[in-house]
Length: 78
Image (cartoon, rainbow, N blue to C red; front, side):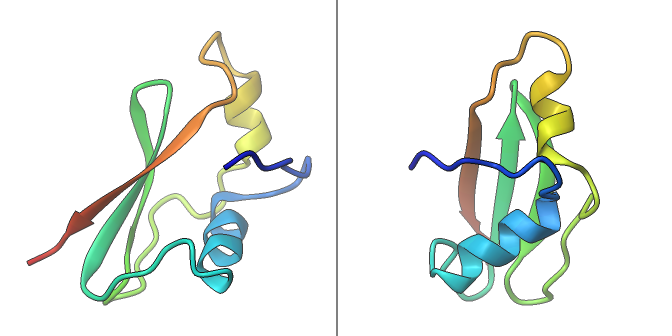
């Protein structure tokens, strides 16, 4: 899915947007947002824990030569 990211969108706001539109389904699962081969954040659907919620996505895009592709990875927690 292609998505235009506002200049001020954080990891938390992206997670909220994706979950609201049901792009992050799952009970007792963990999601990882990866960029440039590195994990930026993880989100646990059972505990609602989100790591690095205040990271701005545009800052990641403008850092280095990693491009502007992000990948969400799904993993069952049990």
